[in-house]
Image (cartoon, rainbow, N blue to C red; front, side, top):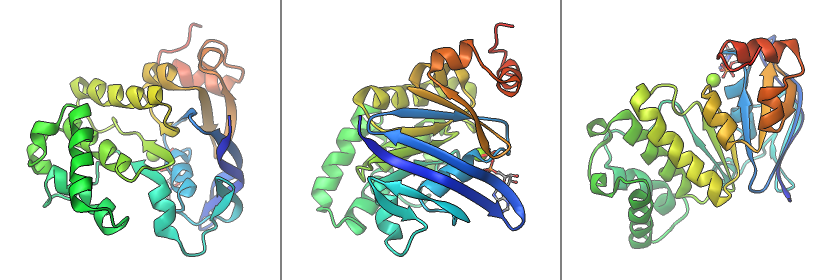
Length: 247
Ligand code: ADP
Ligand code: MG
């Protein structure tokens, strides 16, 4: 498989505080990489560095061979090519579902409004939300909002999709409907980097698991060996805290 995203020797500090310490990661086209690690270990920061939402102090991020962080201009273009979905949905509250979805394609990509609306309807249909196209975000459940946020990101046809704990704010009964959407995207061959605390989901969706602790990649591997045969004490301990270890 061809490489699409490469993170090389990346270091990130906030002031004097190191957050990411010489991290390397390569993501192939169609690959689903799932990142787990304790709270505060730098997962969100890592994702934000990948689409140039954060300045980095060392190293580089390449998208399809092109330097995108450190970034000189073209920030908008980078964010079209790498979509991101957050825990907090970030939908525009005073716009309908359909307007939320067509805004960026029409304004930023200069897509024909009619075409954008047609595509948005198809996407909503696929996630079971076509009937809510004229609703406002406040009229939707958390699970519905998050499904809208995911398909809104897809409207830009990103080459890579970054998902940062997208079910962390949801009531338990809504987690599943959102994760099922992500699993369907994985089956379609979308390239995704996912941060999650849902270990069963991670195992089901990941081509490759990454464990970050203290700003470094401590362990990585295919889901089976990652969950069944963790090598480091730190990962064993981490998995145990999710009751996901056999020991
Ligand atoms: P995670 O997503 O793994 O929980 P984060 O990437 O959010 O971790 O945060 C990593 C560390 O960086 C934490 O110690 C956090 O407090 C700190 N941090 C995150 N964002 C900022 C910021 N904008 N300014 C200063 N410190 C930050
Ligand atoms: Mg986070």
